[in-house]
Amino acid sequence: MTQADLEKFKQILLGTKADLQKELGHHPLISDMGTDTEGQSFDEEADEAEEVPVNYGIRAALKERLAAVEEALQKLEAGQFGQCQHCRGPIEEVVLTVAPTSLYCRGCKVKL
Image (cartoon, rainbow, N blue to C red):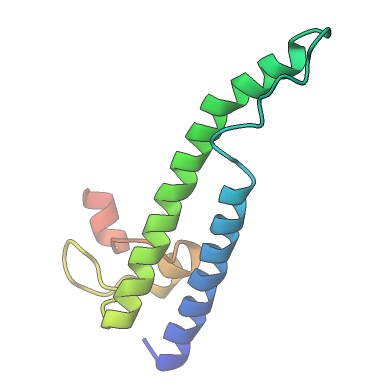
C-alpha cells in the first residue's frame, strides 16, 4: 500500500471519527427530565424517560464503532494498517475501501 493510500484511509478514518463523536453528542444518556409538567399530562416526561434506554443502545453501538476507528488509526500509525489479524497477509484494498476498520482479508472472513 502506498503512502498516498495510507493518507487517504487516514483521512477517511478521521472523518468517520469526527462524525461518530458528533453523533454521540446527539444522543445524551440522560434527558432533561424535570418538573415542567406540573398540572399537565405526563406524556412528555414519559417520552423523555423512554429515550434513556434507546439512547443507551445507540451510544453503545456508536462507541463500539468509534473504538474500531481508533484502533484502525493506531494500526495506521504503527505501520500495521491493512494487515489481516488471522493470516497476517494484506487486506484487499477493495475491502478496506468498503470497511476501513476491517480486521480480516477476504479469505479469512470466509473461513471465520
